[in-house]
Length: 324
Image (cartoon, rainbow, N blue to C red; front, side, top):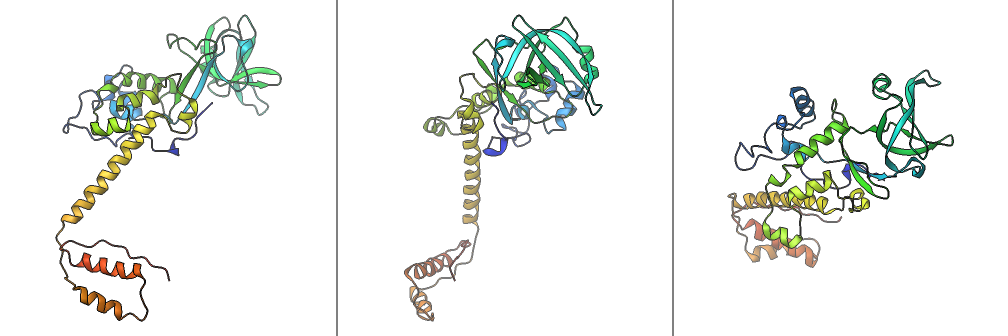
């Protein structure tokens, strides 16, 4: 199961939208360079910077665009078309092949004690010839489908050694997927995000404590951890519809600061000096009586409100709308 696009609901702050708190220098790790993370050299840092990700904080707020449910099937014979599974099997056949359109692809067949599974990749055939060889035992993750009566995976991910055990039979893992960062493989990006998550608890709380308690909102670190590393018990449907407690926290924060900004702007306008034009009630009634029609109660009320606004020493900001 896979969630849809990321634009269904507010998803929190993005790269470049979070000013360093506590002064210009900010937090030494969160607002420091990505070179603090393992595996980030000058080349990788430049690739991430081209995507607008220059600090650990910005990487934390580079949110997943979707999530997939990865099921541990336990054995090839238990795989079902349509599921995303992790299997561990031995390569029995591997090599380049050609499509009818003379396109070079790479195919392999793996097996365990229960059956065989065909693998196909439509690009990077040269690299795969060096990486996938008969006799190797691979841990593979991908979506299962049935093609010409046989089970297969197209473009399965080859999990690296030490990347963690596959889900046990009958269990699942929720895997985040991110927008493309040119030059950075998805697996490498996931490792960097995992390293950044170790510093998530250092994120400053920007909402008033009373609001957090009243609305029962997560901390910013807990919210980001839920999105980047969803717990297996989290309903996948909630991720799809952006209705997790994490989405609620980030969306609430966005709207809180939007409303705060509007309130501050309104307060600034109210403090601006203006010119008062006192209008007596008698003058208002005279103006209403001069109309070539009898105004409705609502129309008369609005005229009196405008007269009241004009009498104040602040600028008037009013939109008058009426039906013709």
